[in-house]
Image (cartoon, rainbow over all chains, first blue to last red; front, side, top):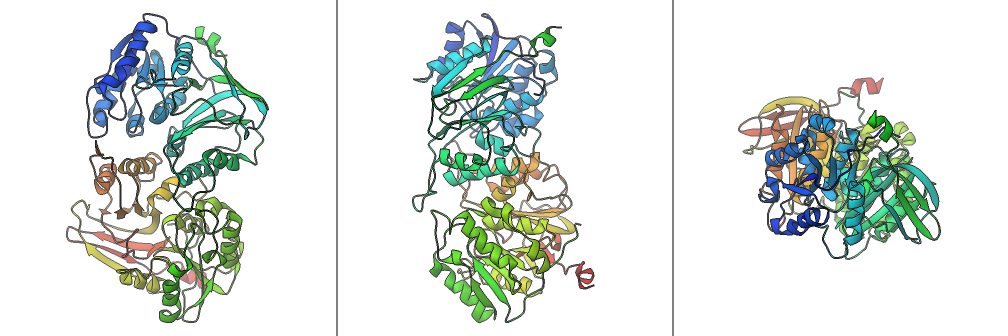
Length: 314
Length: 314
């Protein structure tokens, strides 16, 4: 396992930053999330300027989105940065993020979808981050369990999930580092500095609104670049609002597509995991170690405390 | 320049194979193309079984499409393989193509769009191939010049193109190997065996029917993986039927997107080149050397005879 550090867990009264590093967001859409963080979790929220600006489909120009994120990365008083929403834009600026001060004052970075790029960058710096609901989605109807899972992870209570079996599951047991995120972003980052190393790891994937043939193509890119060969396990999240040609159709749904591409491997695989573009989008620690148990009856994923924690304290 | 070999050029009476290695094709749609090859170019056409079969959105199962292509690759009497159409499916089987007999009996492989995968594979084996109209599109209205350019290239007359200047062009001069094809496929192949090496080369790109943000993202993948850094030149073809969000829009069109991503480099760039999902889709030799001259007034691209030709004859 790559050595990984955890930023300090949150405690009530801590400051967190909320910003929109990718697509434009309506400020009123993040107000309930901010209220959750302040009133229920007891945090102080610092609002990024990108919550109230826009530039075409982005929340701001590249330079301004970068500046907003960089300021929060550099601010020692901010203990976590929670994105407002994804969309598109993170990979336009991810290579310009400077993690020098972050390494002095590490903090949690939280988001999913397009934010997969920032999570991957944080992993490359040697720090865990959190794939989880964002300010805009965390108060959705049905997001209560997911919101609580993020709260637990941020406050240092490692969450454990148990979900029902799916007919396509492949039984098995793995304890390994968790990596993953949005499939489109994982395929998109191949060849770049933030390409995800998957050997020996539990990989999770999710996506939304893609044509099935394109889903297939992204799986093939992962496979042809060796990303599926040596997994410890595969956790398949939600593939939401996938599209098909009218006629002729692709002939397989998302889970059948994935199952085809991992047929030849022996690691445990589970489908229908509550992660993705859905309300029940449970917090997943990127870089954290977890135990995955897939049986005929159920799936358990249990995040483990950081085994590096002691060396961190020295 | 990588050493590259040319298959033998065609002569009247030669056999060529026509098949559908990716999406389903209607047989009647390829009849006019086959007639062009036989009646006007004097070739004998061997029809692949995939011209008349189907499997969901594919022309046949992976195994059957592979078998059809492999049979033509292996047949010493077939001097060129011309795809009927692209669509989707080549990257599902490209790694299983066996080029052993091809190396004994090299032949031209012709196609574009999804066929970019096969052209890239052929390049990796050390042989030139041709990005050009396919059987289904070569008799389209307005395809006469493009059809003639393919005929020239197949019969050993290296074509030269002169096209009008475009306001975004960057002047310059380069003589280098040509690589490229469909942008989506070029991004998709990054990390795989058929990833395109672009250093010191003239890269051409084209695409169809993508959202502008996705076009941007594909350019970013090329850039982040170093594919745009050290080009000898960039030839930007047609970006057809590109889509935008209703509101807010992306804020740039395809050519402005590309221009942004190559601003910092000094090599010549030209836009609006007649290559892509349009009738006037001129033959481009993959792996062939060409001279590119971009001035304020016009663009010239001239394919050169193979400088390895003599060593081939030894």
